[in-house]
Structure formats: structure tokens, C-alpha cells
Image 1: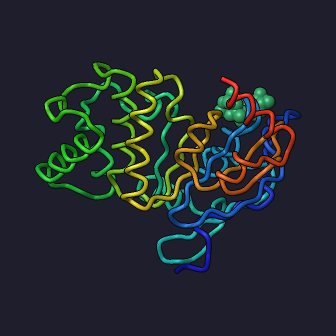
Image 2 (image 1 turned 45 degrees about the vertical axis):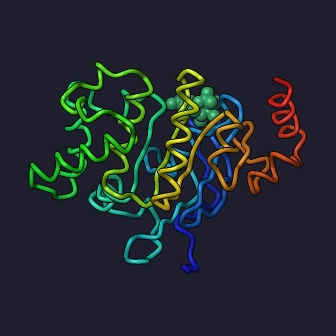
Length: 258
Ligand SMILES: Nc1ncnc2c1ncn2[C@@H]1O[C@H](COP(=O)(O)OP(=O)(O)OP(=O)(O)O)[C@@H](O)[C@H]1O
Ligand SMILES: [Mg+2]
């Protein structure tokens, strides 16, 4: 077993001018672990996620990542080429809005194949074959491989976005409300699929959600945020069954009442 975490956040803080995005967030993420970041709208979840994924520079604090060679590196000290390489190969990022994570005007097959080409695959037949396998893994019929995502339903687009992210065998996937904006029945199916893939691939995941049921189903550990700060953290079952912070108690009880 590795003794170092995959990712370590230390005192991550981000201001937008005078406005607080998130403040002093520290945690470690271990290989194969799914961490949920929960909290109400505006609590700083997306800000934190974007800092972790180097899409946004923190105002203070550090984020270290264990590279494939085992070295812990400060993400904001990487060269642009190293950072791009991580984003293309080792990481995935699943956006809430599938259109932000897909190319809407190229075929489903190309959306998946493009990521493979970005890591050096050149053989057209292999790329198409792998893309087809992945479409089927995310329950998209292979006959749709030449269709644009514009012709897909919301749930299919989200599954395509997931295939595009997972095809390169990332070690870490960031997800921002991956089931937000979908019908409840579509959400349930997508969650089921995600849960299976994450377990099969042994992925590490940081998932942002305001839905405690999503956190319960997918995550091992959770961080509860409010007004940009972490107010509670722990094993998901423990936090949900025995919340300590009054705010978490309120969140949990408001869910149970519906
Ligand atoms: N680009 C920005 N410019 C200025 N303020 C921002 C920006 N993005 C976020 N904020 C502010 O930072 C705080 C945290 O926002 P953030 O988007 O991280 O919250 P969130 O928990 O993801 O909310 P939601 O659940 O609605 O997506 C909010 O007060 C928000 O107004
Ligand atoms: Mg958000």
C-alpha cells in the first residue's frame, strides 16, 4: 500500500476580489477513495473543486499531487506542459452541464476518440474500436457512434461525457454535480452506472453535490461546507447517521423529512 495520499490540500483559500470563495480547506485523498463535497448553493464547492483541478488559482494554500512516478508535486509549481499532460491523461473532469465537457458538433465516437489521440493513439481502427467499447460501457447503443451529442438526451450526453473522461484510464476524476439537472429516474440510472465504473476502475473521485443521497451512494468520505469553510468532515455513513455540526444536522433532517 502507498503511504502517501494521491492528493493533499493544505489551507486552500480563494477570494474573488473581496468575496470569499473558500477558506483554509485541508484534506487528503487516498487512492481509490471517493470524497464528496457537499453544502448549500454558494458554499464554495465549485470554487474548491476548480482549485483542486488547477482550473482556478488559489489565493493561498497548496495542493500536492502524487505523480505516476510517485513524487509528490505542488500542482501550482508544475510547468504548463506537465499540467496539461495531467489533465489529458491522469485526470478527468465531469461538468454539470455536459455541453461544457463535450464537443457538441463532432460525433460521439470522435468525442471519445479525441482523448485517445491526445495521449498518442494513432491507429484509426483501434481508436474506433475502443470508443465503441466505451459507448457500450456507458449504455449508449453502438449504432449512435456517428451521431452528434446534440442529438442525444441529457442523460446520454452525461454518459458520453463520462466515457470521454474515463477512456484514457485516469487515476483521479473531478465531478461537479454530475447528476444535477437530470430527471430523477435518469439520475438514479446514471448514479448506478457511475458507482459501478468507479468501483471497477478503482478510481479516486472528488465529487461536488448538494444532494446528500448522491454523497451517500457514491462516497466514502465527505466534507460539508458552509460560507466557504469546512464545517464537518468524516466517513460518509458516520456524518449522515450522526452529524455533529448543527448545520449538518439540519441538512440531514431536511432530507429525511421529504
Ligand atoms: N467568478 C466569480 N466571481 C466572483 N464571485 C464568485 C465567482 N464564482 C463564485 N463566486 C462566489 O464564491 C462563493 C462560492 O461560490 P461557488 O460557486 O464556489 O459555490 P457552490 O457551492 O459551487 O454553489 P452552487 O451549489 O450554487 O454551484 C459565492 O459567494 C459566489 O458568489
Ligand atoms: Mg457549484
